[in-house]
Length: 105
Image 1 (tube, rainbow, N blue to C red):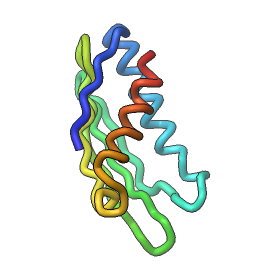
Image 2: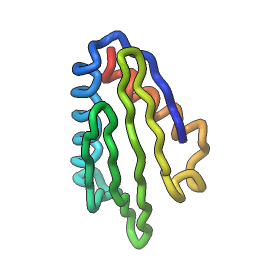
Image 3: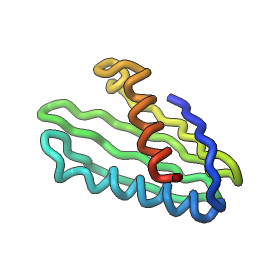
């Protein structure tokens, strides 16, 4: 799944917003029935690489990807694994895009 969203923040502000968003997702393990395991993130310049495992019952789904921040855009490129089988691509895209737009306004 690839999503590009324009922003009007400084690059640094946009990177901070992305970092907070990833931390929020990693902290979502308190939200039953999904728990987050093995959260990892690292910045290389303006590119954030992330991975986690979303667990629900006996199902375990690895999710990984990158978020590139430029002076004008934020591009999320994520492999959502079997979530793409459980939810429509449009639903996943809309959910992620809405969340990111909210952080960048």
